[in-house]
Length: 120
Image (cartoon, rainbow, N blue to C red; front, side):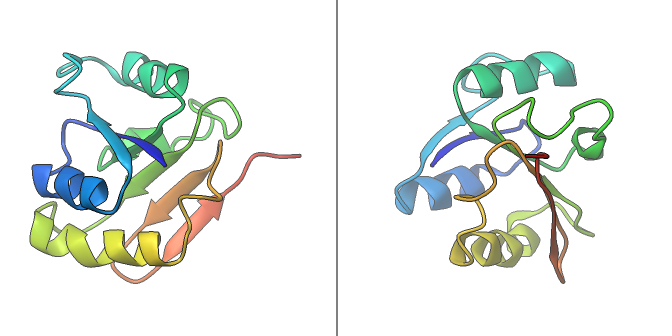
């Protein structure tokens, strides 16, 4: 799976995803730190990467409609540190949810994962 981590995601997440065999790039590594949301998502889409972020603006389906990007995962957690993110991320990976996300949106909380898939 090709993944782009937004600048607000912990580096531990990148390491875990790489250890699991995913092709991971970060917004910071690509010199996109501080950019607004559209250029970040455009870069992810151009590279065929699913964007993982804490930025709730990416959950706006009017601004970023499903089917117009490679996929977005927004984590809505009480705490953005790795110790809080680790279990929801592992749950997302264990269910194979990233594999079927193509062009869709996933909202991940401590308790559940909700999906908005592109219309066929």
